[in-house]
Structure formats: structure tokens, C-alpha cells
Length: 199
Image 1 (tube, rainbow, N blue to C red):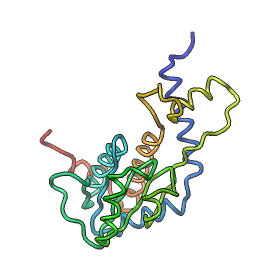
Image 2 (cartoon, rainbow, N blue to C red):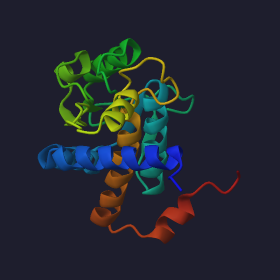
Image 3 (spheres, one colour):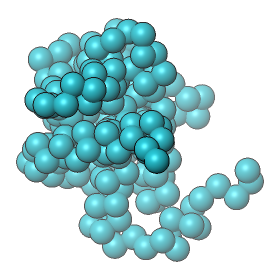
Image 4 (cartoon, rainbow, N blue to C red):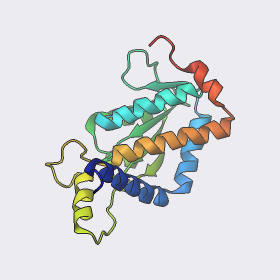
């Protein structure tokens, strides 16, 4: 009996995420953690699926007791110097996100970019960058190679997934939250008391 193709795809994604985790810079991670811990307020943003990752990240920062907001929401306050915006953008080129990043810089805020493209419009103005690699590893198995190309968005017919950047970014963001919990000595009860109770 063969494994279900969905489970095989999940394992392939997990393997790719593990490989990406192995090459993320420790220095870039530490710089991001430092900026978050020392920011007056933290804003998050992204477009499309990256925007959903940004919203989830802001929610978890709020659960940690930090002042966190999602750019574009109706209750998001004006940005000030001393604030940080964490941007999730695989390409680093999305026009609306790049425009807002430039505005944040003009205001005096810091821009932290989570991306697969350092040499991008946002990358060129970002104060701090964490690179989530998007390059494929060499794979000897041709069927596995095809599936990886599909996940990386190299075949436009594979619309539901498109890219593994957002999936990796989500895992990375949750790992950042776990590390922040350790650094701030925040326990699960602290998170529970800030969790939504009117849903």
C-alpha cells in the first residue's frame, strides 16, 4: 500500500523547510529579535498569502503582550519614530508593500524584511533583512524534482500552492514567537489571558 500523495507532499514540504532552516543566518535572526524586543510598537504587513502570515504574526505578538498592529487595519495607529514594521514579501517588489515600506522609512520607523530576494526594492531600503532561501536543492529523483518545481511556483499550472515561501515564513514566524516567549519569560498562561474570548 502506497502513501497518500497529500501526505507525501506534506513530507516534501517539511523536508524543504528543514533545508531552508539550515541556511537562515543566525545573525539576521538575532537582529530581528533585537529590533522586535526594543521597538516601541511593531507593525506587520504583506500582500496576499504573505499578508495572512503577517496578520498571524501580529496576533501572536499581541498574545506576548507587545504593542502589535497590522498595517491597513482600521484600528492601526499612526506610525512614529521608534516603531518597527516587519514586512513579509517573497519578491520584495510588491508595489503596495514597497510604497508603504518607503513611507515607514520617511516617518522614521525601521523596516525589517522577511524575503527570498535581498536585491529588491524593499531590500534596498530595509534596515534588517532575514533571507528565506528560495533556491532549489539538487534532487536525483525526477518525480521529486517535479514536485519541488511545482511547490516553488515554477509551473504556473500548480495554482493552489504556488510557492513555499509563505509556508516557510509562517513556520519561521511561529519559531520567532517561541524564541520571544523564552527571552521574555512569558508562559502559556500569559498568552491564554490575552487570547480572544468573544469569538
